[in-house]
Amino acid sequence: MTVVCLESLTFGLGRLVRAADRLGERLLLLTRDPAYYTYELDRLPAGSLDVVVTDTFDVERSAALLRRTPALRGLISSTDTWTLAGAALTERLGLPGLDPAVLRLTRDKAAVRTRLHDAGLTRGRAVEVADPDREARGLLLKETGLPLVIKDTAGTGSQNVWLVRDEDELDAALAEASCRDLKGRLFAEPYFSGPVYSAETLTWDGRTRLLGVSSRLMSPEPHFREEITAFPVAFPGPQLTSLESWLDQVLAAITYTDRFAHVEFVLTADGPEVVEVNPRIGGALVGEGLCRALGVNVYEAMIEAALGRRPRLMDADCPGGPAVAFVLGYPAAPGVFTGVTGLDRLAGMPGTPAWYPVKRVGDAIEHLGDSRGYAGIVYAEAETAELATHRAVAAAGALRVRTGPFPDPAGPEAPGG
Image (cartoon, rainbow, N blue to C red; front, side, top):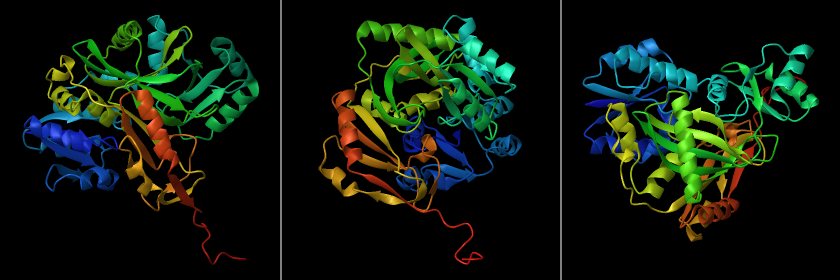
C-alpha cells in the first residue's frame, strides 16, 4: 500500500519514511530533482522508499503516473509551491484530502486577510494594488494607513515583501514590485508591530489542537528575513488557552477542517494578528523540533491524515522532550557558496549542536534579504526554548558561511580584457 509524497520540505523525509513504515505503508517520493533531498536520502537505508523523477508541476503527467501506481491510498503535499498541484491530484485521483477550494484560499494571502476581516478576526483588510498611479496610491494610503506591507498574494519564504513607512518608500516599493516576477497579485495590508510567532497546529474534523508555538526572531526592518526559531515558547497557561481558542476561530473562518497548519502571527499590544496561514507543517527544522520536543514522530499524523484517518496525535498525551532552537546560517555577502568553517567546534559546545546543510558547494547565493540566502541551519537543544536559543546562537557564532565571487559572465577571455 502506497502513500505518495509530492515533493517535500528540505528536512523531514526520513521521519516521514519511518512513520510510513510503522503504519504499514510504502512511501513514494515524486520529485523533479532528487538531489534536493540529498541530506535526507543519504541517511536512509537503501530501498527505504521509492523515488520517481518527473515534472511535478505537470499535473496531467503526475496523475497518469499515479494512476499506474499499485494500491495508492493517499497523497501528501507539504510545500507551498506544490500545494495547488497536490490539491488537483487528490481531487482527480479520488484520494482523501482537504477541499481544494480551501487550499486555493490559503494560497491567496489577500483573500485570507479579507475573510478574516469579514469574520472580525483582524483589524486590517487587504487592499489590492491594481494601479500604481498617484490617485490609486492615495486611496491605498487612506484605506491601509502607515506603516503598511506590500506583498505577493502567493509569495513564499518572505520573498517579494516590502515594508512601507512613508510615501517615498511606497513609491520605491511599487517601482521595485513592477520589475518582479510575482507568483500571484500585489496587495497591501497594515503592518502589525510586535514579536512574530508561528503556531504549529493539527486540525481534524474542524477541531484544532495547538501543538505549541515557535518564536520567529526576524532581521531588523525593513527586511523580513527569518533568523532564529525556538520551540516551544513558554506562554502562561491562560494566554496559551486564549491563543488556542483564537487559532480555532481563525482556521474555522477559512473552513480549514483537517491536517497540519503553520500559522504565522504577530502578538501586538492589542492581541494576535495573523500574518499568513500555511496549510502544512512548518518548514526548515520546525518538524524535527516538534518531534523532539513532543517526544513523538508527528509525521505519523501526516500519514494518517493522508489516509483519511483521524490522527492519533489529536488525542495523544505526548511524553515530551527537550526544547529546541535553530539559527539560519547566512553568509556575510552574496556569492558562490564555498563551505562552512568552524564545524569542528560544535562537538565541544553545549546543547548537542548540529549543522544541517541546505546549500551545496558551488551553489549561487544571490539574495540575502529573505530565506533564499541561508546555506544551512544550526540546531541545539536545552531544557527551555530560551536556553536552547542561547545555545544555538552561541554555536552559530562559531561558524562562518563562506562565499566567493560569482564567475565573470564574460569569461576569462572577455574582449578588451
